[in-house]
Each structure stands twice: as structure tokens, then as C-alpha cells.
Length: 151
Image (cartoon, rainbow, N blue to C red; front, side, top):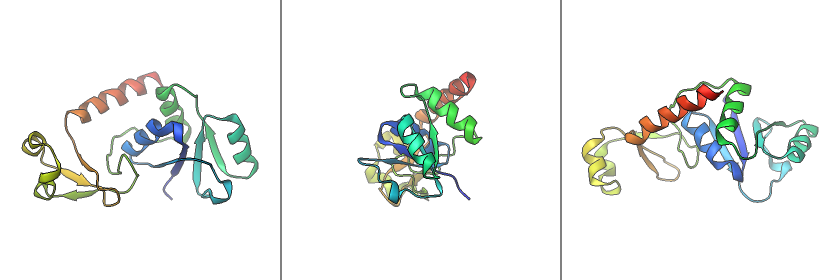
């Protein structure tokens, strides 16, 4: 069964990186209603209070450091034994699976330089975001490598 992560709103950066690695990650905005919390998910929090409350209810919770993103990602990857590979198969914004699209389909929605340089594009069917592996992909790989060296 696929692991799903639910994170506090202040952990959006961590959620985005989990999506880059191919894991479903959703940020909970506003008030957290425990009755609506999915029993198959892992709630990631910076709050000891929420961590203890979720555990008392038999829900899976994991606590991460409050301000250090790299340490947050390391601790989640280690604890849940996540693979360290940028899959980029989920939308960075909403976690929906991405679909491959022909570059002609997205030509009007991307910068001309990107249209000329990139050949593979993916589209989020849920929010409409378009993705491609540009120079940012190499920067992401370097950043992940640097983070993993600290783990």
C-alpha cells in the first residue's frame, strides 16, 4: 500500500520535496479535524501536543524539528526508509499523478525558450500545472545529494 503523508501547513516545503521523491504528501490548511483524518496516513508535525494526541487516538504520527528543512527531510527519509530518488511523477502542488503530454499541447502555456530547449513535459490533470526537467532539475539533484550527505 502506498504511504501517504499529511503535514501541517508550515511544512509545505517538506511536503513538496516528498512529492519530488514520489510520495503523496498533503498539507492540511486551517483547523485540523481529527475525525476526518485518514487512518491510512502518517501525520507529520512539529508539535509534541499534536503528536501525542494523534498517538493516543491510534493514528500514526511523526514529529520533525521545527525550523530545519534538511533535518526534517532526513528524519522522515530515515524513519520511513524512503528511497532517495527524484521521480517527479507527482504534482509538486497537489500530489496528483502527472501525465506525459506532447509539447505542442502546452506550447502556449510555457516560455518560448523552454519550448525550444525541453522535449518532455508532464501535466497535472488536477490543477493544470506543467512540469519539465530544466536546469532546476540538476540543482534539485545536487541539493538532495547535499542533504543526504548530512543524514
